Length: 323
Image 1: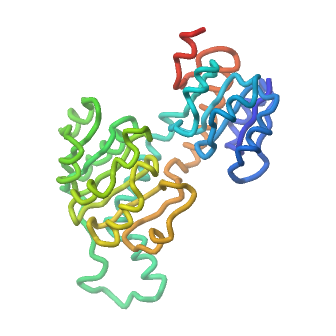
Image 2 (image 1 turned 135 degrees about the vertical axis):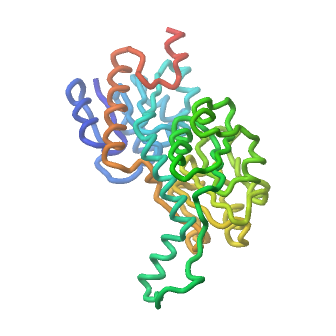
Image 3 (image 1 turned 120 degrees about the vertical axis):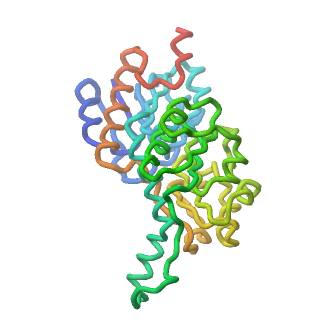
C-alpha cells in the first residue's frame, strides 16, 4: 500500500514502514499547506501526520482510498476525529514514549523561570556582571513549596512524582482521583481555584478540548500568588495568551515558562520582550530517544491499521465496533 508522511520523521519509523509499504515523505523541512497535504494524499492508503497538520474534513474526504491516519503526537486535536470515525478510518497517537521527556521539560522551565536562568544568562553575556551583589537576580525557592498540577494523566503524574526530592506539598486538579499521587506524595485533589490560590508553582498537563480552552484566563491569573510561576507544556490555547501577557507585564505573577502558544508558530512580540517568561519552541519531547520512539510507535500504528487490525494506540475504537 502507499503512505504519505507530511514531514520527515526519525529513520527507525521510516524503515519499519518501508519493509511493508511504499512511502512518500514531504521533501520540505516545513509545515505543508492544506493543498499540499491533499495533493500528497492522492492515491494513498495511509496518512502519517504531525500535530502541526490540520487534518480536517476536507483533507479526510479528499482521498477515497484512505484507510488509516497515524498522528506523530500524543494530542490529536489537529484531526477531525468525528469525520474520520464516520468514514471508518482509525486514528492513532503516540502516548507514553514522550511522558518523561515532557515532564522533564516542565521541570526545566520551572527552574529556569524561578531562578531567572535565561535572564541571568543574557545579563552575563551582555557584560553587565560586575561581581556578587546581595540583591542580584533574586528568584523563588523551590524546595518545601506547594506544587499545583492541573491534569494528572501520564505526563502530569510523571511531573508530580519528580517533585519527591524537593519535599513539596502537591495539589492536583483532575476529573478523577489519582491514587498513585495520593499514595506516593500524599497529594490532595482540589478544585482549580483552590489550587491556583495556594500553589507556588502551577503546571498545566491537560488535553485541548472545549472545556480546557482558555482554562487559564484573567480571572484565574488574578487568583494566583504574586510570587507564583505558571508552566505550560500541554497546548497553547489552554492559556488566554493576551491575559497572560497582561499578568506578566503587571506582575500579577512572578513569571511563566511556555513550550506551547495559542497561535503556533506565532509568538506575540509583546511576550518576547518580557524578561519574566521563558520561551521554548514546542520542544518538550525533543530528546533523541523520545522522538525516535514516537516514530516507531506511529509506524506500528500505521502498519496495524493498514492490515485491518486495531492499532495499539487507536483513539477512536468505535470504528471497530461498527465493523
